[in-house]
Structure formats: C-alpha cells, structure tokens
Image (cartoon, rainbow, N blue to C red; front, side, top):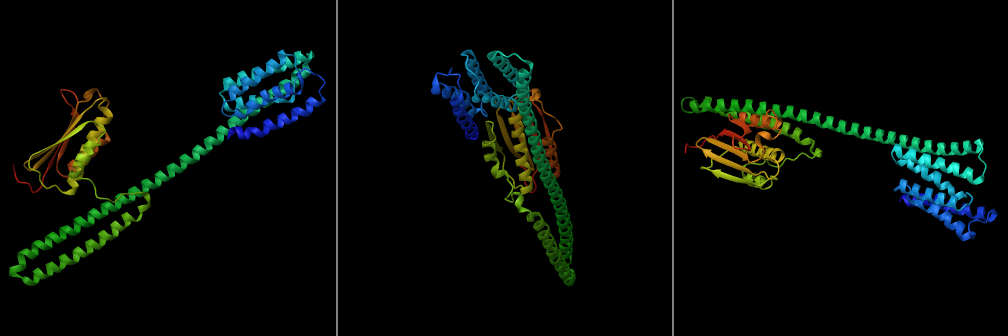
Length: 375
C-alpha cells in the first residue's frame, strides 16, 4: 500500500527525466539508457520509503555519490534525496534525522565542487532547501504525534466515561440488591411471626388463625410483587453483557480444579451435607481465589491440593500449594483474602491464610453446615 502511494512521485520524476535528457548536452550518461537507468536507481527506492526510510535514504545517497564520482551532472531524479530526507526526518528518531541532514548537506557541498563554483550564494541556497525539507519532516512528525496523542486522549476519555457509567450502574444495582434483601428479610420475618401465631391459635382461636393465614398470604404477595419489581430493574440493563445464569457451586468444583492453570487435585472426605446455594458459591469462590493465588505467586512447577472435609456440622475447606510460600510477594490484606473473610463471615465461619511451615501456602476456611447430623 505504501509503495502504491509513492508510485505517482516516482513516475513523475522518471517522466521529468526524459525531456531533461533531450535538452542536455553533457553527454556523460552513456546515452539515454544510462540516464534513465540512473534515474530509476534514484527514484524506484522511494516506493519503499515509508517502510524502510533509512535504507532508502542510504541507497539513494550512495547512488548520488556514485553519480558524483563518475563526474555526471545533477539531474531531476536527484530530488529523490530530498524526498528520502523528508521520510527519515518524519519517520525515524531524531539522531537519525540529524545524520541524514548532515549527509544531505555534504551532498550540497559535492554539487558545488562538481560545478567548480564554490560561491556562498549557491551553498546558502542549497542549504536552505535541505534545511527546509528537513524541518518540514520534523514538523510533520511532531504534528502527527500530537494528533495521535489527541486521539489517544479522546479514546481514554471515552473509556473512562464508559467505566464511570458502568461503576454508577454497578453502584445502583448494589443499592437495589440491598433493597431487595431488606424487603425479603422484613416480609419473611413478618410471615414467620404470623405463621407461628397461626400455629398457636389454630385450635383455640380458629378465626385469629385464619386472619394470620390471610396476613401471611397478603405479605407474601406484596413481597413477591416487590421482588419482581426490583429484579426487573436489575435485569433491565441486559445489554451490558451481564450473565444471569445460575451461580457455580460444589458440583462445579472438579471442573474448576481441572482448569485452574496449575496441577491440582480435589479430595472430598466425610458424609456430605446439604449446603445452601449461597454457601456453595462461597466455597467455590474461596477455592477459586486460592488456586488463583497459587498460580500467581506459587512460582514455576507449583502444585495444589483442594480438600473438602465434612466434620459434623462443619465444612472444612483447605487449599494448599507447594510453591514459594513466605518468599512469594503476597499482601496479607489483599482484596482476595478480604473477599474470603466477607463470604465466610456472612455464614458465621472463619478463614485463615498464610505460608506453611514446610513451604508453600495454605488457605483454611471453616463454615457451619446447617441441618447436618454429627458424624
């Protein structure tokens, strides 16, 4: 594509060379073929000046120097030196641009020597032309970088705007989720109290029990309506790619361990109890975070072991690795450990994490298992 862009310039210079030869009486180019051949050597490399500006400038400069050594007069095709100089100033680092400018200036001196007319006015005119082309290339480079920086700033501002919008949406969704929790907790509490009252009064005062049942029905309907409204708001912004598929649980642990990115094994012990979906999600996230830490901080060749042990009314989750342990640059108050503590604390459990005495790292969590018989 760059070669196609430069093709019109090359064709123009070659066409310009023909009438110049027709009116030239120097006769030092070994005929028309030699003249056109040298013109092609000077012009054709410009087709690749955008991809390899330094190489093209070197080729054209060497061809021009060979032209001077063979005592040939300058020709229109020598304008290729200025075009290549512009490309170097525009596309290369400043030291290379300086070097190219010096070479072009040496070319001006050689032309003056060839014509045996070492006048200051000729040197000044040639130098002005070289410097003008050189400065034009530098200016175009500076302007191009400035426009690129403006484009980058605009893209960054757009990303920040989108990020702020997502953060605002996430904050609003969190607020609505809190509302949903409050609505559910309040209405369920009312329903439990009414149900208890109905249970006590069902034999002694059937009318009061009937009223309590009606109150339960009314409260339940109100709670369902409010839940539908709030969940509907949460789902309205489905265009952001939010996934509403069921959250992972204990059934997905084996798949998680297999795809952890480190060699890992899953070991389950004791009679399994029935865990609510929320606690299953908490266990899944704890294991996921622990395996992620092993992958990030364990070092090369690290291996991990995930153990789930049902001990009476307690589920013990233990994730160990044989990595660098205390030598790994971990933060004891990192977001991962804070997230584990919040998840486990929500269900009345506890979690601890730290380097093992024999090397490696360990994450140990204990969660109560509701409705489980003692082993």
